[in-house]
Length: 328
Length: 308
Ligand SMILES: Nc1ncnc2c1ncn2[C@@H]1O[C@H](COP(=O)(O)OP(=O)(O)O)[C@@H](O)[C@H]1O
Ligand code: SF4
Ligand SMILES: [Mg+2]
Image (cartoon, rainbow over all chains, first blue to last red; front, top):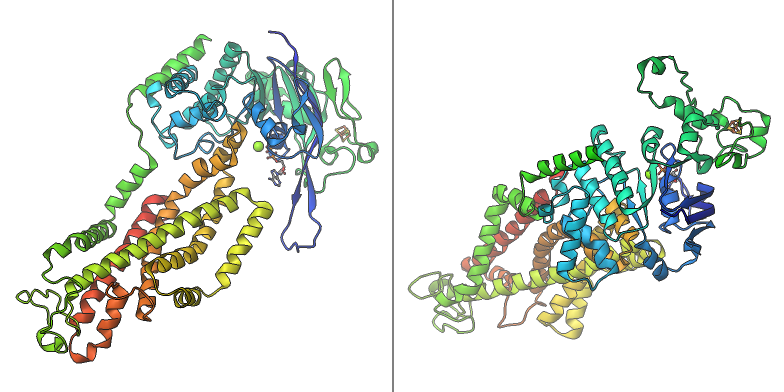
């Protein structure tokens, strides 16, 4: 596998205009900064894990990358070409290279379409001239790959379990042989026992097909298994970005440290004796974020400077970036 | 790797047990509909009425235009329902056979109702789905247009159209159909707004499916449930509207007739002891309307089992 740079995201910002109750037509809409200046690089064959609490902007980041929500500023370079500068038709051509898998496996399948129709949709959309027999062969092929029997092709989504629905979603994402798959919390809605199956399947497929993955989760213990690199998001900001093992063995940001301490350790002796760092307080309102460091309202190490100056994302070690004034 | 393969095999084994064609949501709905006795019976009765309106004329002795001169002016004495004279439902004051006229009126009324509802459903669904899916300014403008059209009094406009352009059955279809899509478009838009946030729409967008195909392939088929319910409830509404207009004397033109026109004539002569002139058309009218409402009700329950 050659590790060429596949995607470079530079200073990506997304905001939403939110209206609250009692707003009048002339009331100025409040701005919700969902993604606030995210930059990262992704190499072919890597898996980037993105973690953060629910509502921290993970899905929005994923959608902005494939221009499903408009970005305020920033660039998304896909093999050197800025995707955000493309118009709708040009972007459509690139959609076949980047596919997505969604959180709610059943809800992401049209209840009125058969499994075969669902899996074939990307193929029919991008290669409308494909013959029926070809489509059928490709659908059967990809169903095999994800561990679904071909004779289920005429079934409807509601006849399947959550895990099987997610396999259907994966098959749909695979049929065009994409280069990058963005998995938005693909296992959060599944039973724990099924989660491992789906993650293993994704890892197998990655090896087999040379896929690059962006794997989103709200829980570090899930991404640990699959990621080569992990990005920790907090209120739309990257607080730490490093290799998977560095995040685990040497987390530098107070928020990451707290998250790591919450990951259960399989050995009960160590588990009992370890310090659990609790994150106290509520997530601040994203409409009204704290000044300076976004994490300061819940940070134990916070000092005066934290409320005055926003910490930049800086290299703390080789390929280990942290956004904290006091990282060690 | 081996573990994963084991899982695959286990999963396949799980699937193996049942294969064959899938059970679509429509099949489920049909089964639930069949369990609803009132709805099934109504569907049956309605089918009988429809069949009667087509084949009933073969048993008629008198055509709907032919005048029985014996009965003219003395319908109360000679024109009562009877098998011997061939006037199964009696005659009206002009000596015309009510049986044939009811058959003909049934055809016209059902046709107006069904065609009118079809126009309304097609226009309303496409309009509402487009407006809801595109959202933003387009949605606002499209819905303000509906608001404006809705504020125009419907009956008044229709009557005006009929007066200005002359009485014609085409005008009736167009008028009723084009005015009653407004409600439909609002209902459909509301549902579309719900659907739009479903992940499968997002999935389609991520794949790169065009807006037009998303509306036709993902939105509209998921609206069909509510559309079917609304359509069955719309048919009697349109039949009523047509009957009202015919009752005013602006509907279909003689010798054609409709339930409304027949009921009007029947009620005009009720004081001359010719109650059959009112009761036969009225019975068809009432029974059919009830049937449509029960079917609509049954469809709603069948298509949306959670809604109960
Ligand atoms: N379409 C939208 N309109 C307004 N606000 C939104 C929209 N989508 C997401 N948000 C807000 O943006 C923030 C990030 O949301 P999201 O990216 O879905 O978080 P996550 O996927 O990490 O749970 C949340 O505060 C959410 O309320
Ligand atoms: S910058 Fe200050 S508030 Fe923010 S994480 Fe570091 S120590 Fe805590
Ligand atoms: Mg999310």
